[in-house]
Image (cartoon, rainbow, N blue to C red; front, side, top):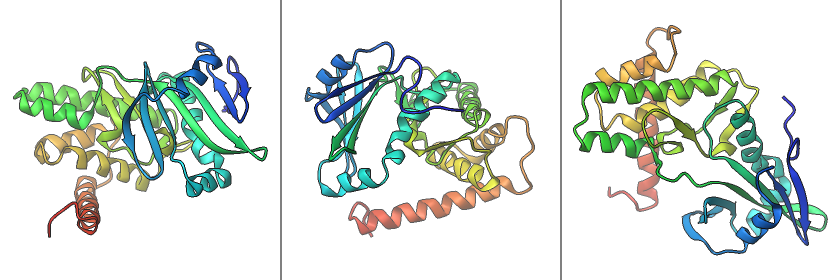
Length: 263
């Protein structure tokens, strides 16, 4: 693999302090215009601001000295989403189409970014999709098909030697329970053969997404399907359940500390 910021079809253009890397289907001028639009806010955190502008999602680092210094020190960490998205798309794996990546320069070095990708019209994350199945009293067969297809989609990451360190249901989207799209791609590492500990973490994350909705009879079959025909080590499902309990306890402790959960 030799995927960089540029590459075949990528057009690079500079606008003052901005450097735009645009895919072959979009003009850098159009990207620059989109960056100047307010759009609608989708998510905001101390690290990043994500908004919808027309048919795109634009994620950029939050303003302020702290995030500027972080980007200055580790630009490769933030470029990862752009590089990974292009790599996975080339390998037929569902991701929001990567349209462009923009860096803001100061003193000749990059100090900020904006990642422009396609808006997933009509999609919801798989946790919300699962809740809709429950609310609609879906049949056991419909639930089985949904989880089996999801397991197959997750296996495509393994097949591409890509490890997603935050594979919770909030980072996987679908519109029809047949095809799936992965987001939060700066959490993906390429050229990686999954270790058992990495695989366990992924299975814990996915089990945690559904264990409040469905019983272990359903979810053990799902976890087994994540192995895609390989045999899980003895006691694997018990390890997944124990890992989920520990994960939930850490999350609830954090929420209590933040005042988001009553004692």
